Amino acid sequence: MRNYQTRHYQHNKKSKIKNNQQRETRPLVQPEYKEAPIFAAMKSYARDGALAFHTPGHKQGLGAHPFLKELITEEGLRQEVSLMEELDDLHEPHGCIQQAEALAAKLWGAMDTLFIINGTTCAIQAMIMGTLQPGDKLLVPRNAHRSIIGGIILAGAEPVFIKPEIDDKLGIAMGLSASIVKAALKRHPDVKALLAVYPNYYGFCCDLTAIADLLHSQGKLLLVDEAHGAHLKFSDRLPKQALDCGADVVAQSTHKLLGSMTQTSMLHIGSKRVDRNRIRQAAGLLQSTSPNQLLLASLDIARLQMQYEGKERVERAISLSHYLRNRINATAGQWSPDRRYCRQCRLESVYDLDETKVTVNLEAANISGIEAEEILRHDLKIQCELSDPRNLLCIISMADTEAEIRRLSRALEDFESEYVFTTKGSMPISEFKVQGMGKMPVLQQAMSPREAFFATRQKVKLEEAIGRVSGETVAFYPPGVPIICPGEVITKEAIKYIRNYQQEGLRLSGPADGQLQYIEVIGE
Image 1 (cartoon, rainbow, N blue to C red):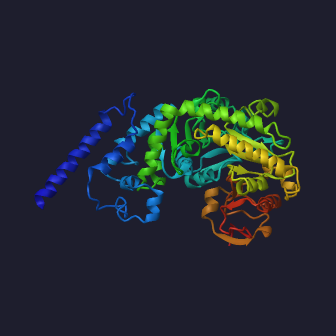
Image 2: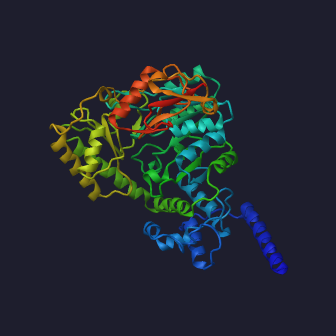
């Protein structure tokens, strides 16, 4: 036994020395490398035939329930292992994960890329924690996703909210303009960075290059939530991706518009203004120490797919979206904005549009977007991405073909003839539809989100919370934009806005009370 242990120890020691040497001297990848390194390593391990006396408990599918086998192939279960030497270490990559991340960085044009298996929420929070110190001020548009508030709480940063421009026709918040950012920097010269949302959920883009130049001229960082922009790199007919606009760090949801599995994202580092090692350390704090190898492999394979098929697939999606938009705009009760609308709306913050996001505006119809989504889903078997009081949003991705788009087009035409101008649209035209989602009230920040998160709280009825400081986040999905953030003073207008959301049937997220009869506020 002693001899075996000695040989085993020496083997492991040599392996570690070899791996350390590889980290220093071995080139990461060859440009002609056409494999998916993580997938190749998993397949090789599964074929090696080593009997499993390790996690996960299903033992490479041996003990998997039949239902699980329906969800995942037997080969997938054999490869669903992690923490083996051949499969690398997500938190200290030196093998196949390092190769896969380097290939992704090369494709998207980043200095470094991190694979994220805890969702873009994790990527955004690692971006904030890896670039800011406790007490640093961060400019944040008010229509930012709630994950940004979580990152601010974790980092101990202080948000400085900026109100984005509102499009009155669509009833949605757009983006920030360079002049809005310039004015905010003048009021708050001590901010460390801006966290921009680019594109917004509906595909509208600000002039991010101008904003990047402005920030960098004053020594500030540009961090970008590009959850809906992982595909922008692959066509000149789309807005420029954030990295190409000069962003310092970018979080992308690879799963949203490309071919990786849900919950997988990439975090791209775009400049030397940030410490990439510190960002990796932040990601290591937030990511699982038992990463799912299937999720990692899906990121690797999505990169491979886009490297060799991306341009063709994205160009097809753009052409299909043009066809669909033209059909929509031929109807009487529906309308879809295109890139020309960016000039027509005369908002400085609306610089460009990702036309694969097809917004169906129902301003001329006698029905709200929320009710329209229900009809499409249950009567016409079409599920759109989201609805709001005035609009539906359909995403055309690299997966779609002419068959899917023709079916969607026919469904929208049937919807028009059957529901839009008949009494079947039962929902009255509410004040909320008239106002739209862009009229969200701006609240006063009484304390930092982190202070509010850790403060003593009490539960009170929402209608009795006017003037109190919130200890919770109140948001609705989609789009996940906080109406109330921890540390903000609750107002009558905010409560009315929330009740309108609930009356429209949108899904509440954040507070402990799922019906929001009560809210937690600061104090005993």
